[in-house]
Image (cartoon, rainbow, N blue to C red; front, side, top):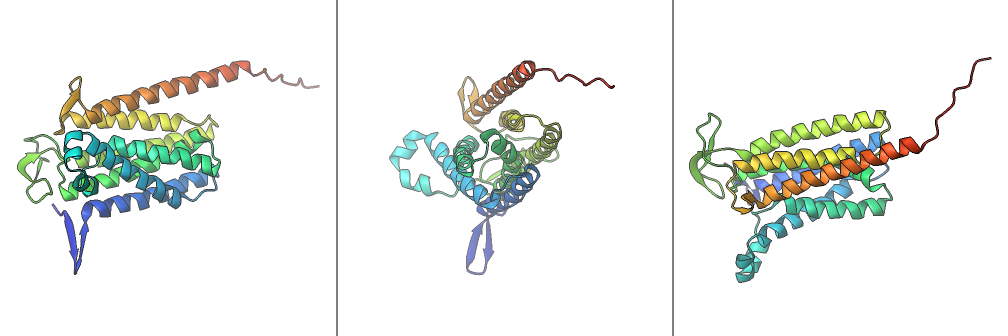
Length: 265
């Protein structure tokens, strides 16, 4: 693995480099989605703010998972370049997006629909940073042909383990494609906003829950890891929101008066 790139006097952590690349590519994806939705907003500024909020949220959530260690020696844990929790990043980025949607005067659900594919792409590329740095985000030992060892990683292992960051990269890129196509379909059909975001909550929640089955994380909630519990909450939130959106659309359709056709003379 390559935790750091050495360019003359400069030492660049590959994790940070890939996170920055993910945010940059996500900005292009979001700008394209804004364009097809005819939304006049600066995607690069939005992704920059939401990305920073997500990084802060991911770091805080991670350190709060071990409160005893945090209170014993907080400063090294808070400023460490390693150790980020997906759900904390989601919460931080989501809160920032809600504020930005209000600031840009865009419907919240429309805004979240547009951000969903971009969020998947950014997350997927960021996971390549986890893979390159070997930061301990890999899975349990495996004898499968694609099992990998990380002897030079930040958290080294000589055992062949599941390269779970690669699993997530491919899964999240596929989800991004599916959400983009769903968004295109709903725009053509003039469907109400919110369903793409529901798909994001459900699909990413299911994907993360499944990956956690083979990941080395402590179990806490009914035999689930913290990330699995958060993923289950994400799926539940997506299903509930989708139910209310479909119900609201059906109620609106029933309440609309039928349009009478004019008879030909």
